[in-house]
Length: 298
Image (cartoon, rainbow, N blue to C red; front, side, top):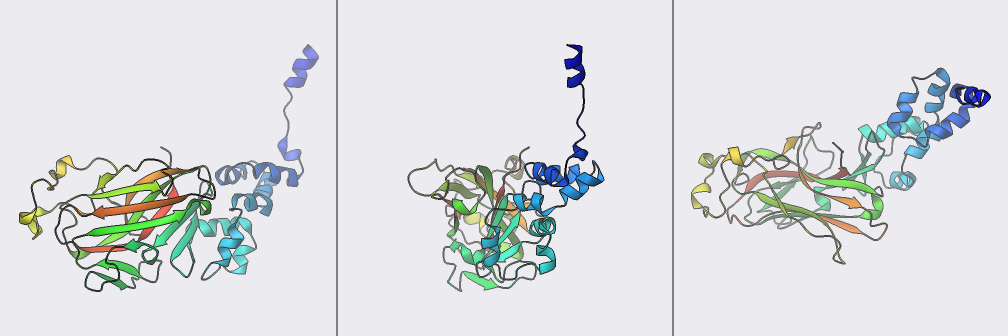
């Protein structure tokens, strides 16, 4: 028994393992854990830098995604899988004729996509009196859509679940800016939802969001709104998640909803924002796109 206890108390020096073995072990962890392990020893640091580890953290279809890129990363980046991984985290890759962008979530390596405005279905979007399409220096895309004047505001996007990371909870976000001269965007809440398309999969649950601050005294349409559609006072309308927040890239975003991607290769998800109940004219919304990224757990 004493001999057994002595045997059980022995510790194993993992640094004594071959570097290839350590690399293989680290490849089954996560990008965050692999970076942390580099502080253990010089052997672990070398193993954590290896292509064996970071190739597993890259999506299995990354070569196919690269083939759709407008401008692939330079060869100096591609030669190191770790450098390539973090390049994709920090520099979204324009794909599909520049209408979409792709990047990786830094902590998990999960896929993130943004559908540019040209990839969205915008009601009246092709009518120059209602929407304009312009280049915007702060946008990753060649064009953004600017709302000139509509009563019926409706923006939709869709994506096949096969291109997303499986068994992952995603959230969809409308990414936009507000023009200095704008009206009607803060008077009535917009409705948003995210749902699977077809086969009655899941229930569609709408919720309200506010695209702008509520300034009735400055909005010419305020006196003409029906009392049934007027928003509550600002102090009563700010539950978490219902107002825009500023992103690190300087744009604004509002969450449209979330979903768990368990549909395999056959599913399709739609995202929608609508404001059609107020009946008033709206202007000054600048749409960059809709981003889908893994939902961060609290």
